[in-house]
Image (tube, helix red, strand yellow):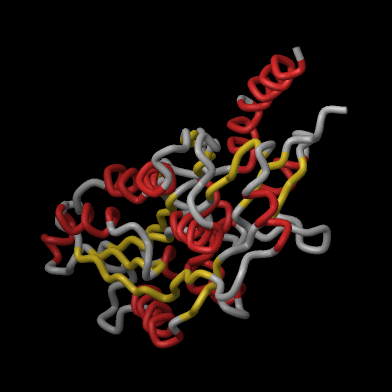
Length: 284
């Protein structure tokens, strides 16, 4: 009997807490090996500052001007939204809604982040193509209205302390005043990886490893050692793909067409016929 191919996913996934990416991968008929390798450390001081930034945009102007200065609130990941919301997602939704009523606009890096914003009852005004650089290009330069009113054209950006700096750099160069708040950091887990994860990493039948973030790849390599030569790495976006190319140069890298569960499943599907053909040739 041909063994079922394994896929390693750098996320948490279980029957009691299913992950959308895990469900999409399991639907391919493969054996999924979840590998949660990182933890989130929240900077409560920066989180409070980020929420105060939003309040300053959402609060009515005491001078009688009902419109806020030209401002964007850029959200870089679903985790950023979860950390910012804390135990009160409804309050964050109301705060973002009040900011929009005063004229602030909301942008998201990728469809997954946009869906997380939608879950708060708010729609995004702009959705980048999956990377910070894409969103910076889409946003362009500040409009002439802010300069005419003497108010700064401002970007409010809560983010990960270890996130890609390309977005803030591109926006600053374009003329925006960027207020960054590193509200959390992603750190590798301490200790050793789970035995099932270690076993999958050394399994010659491992179909691929799905890399959801550069921090996850770094944690994976730190705990388990170099990627097996020739093991395909499926990256969730271009930032993760660049990390794969740098840190695992002997592995082919496939970048999902979008940072979504279905796109990752499509990338893995392209590997399945090749693996079956290889198995058939080995049996001859």
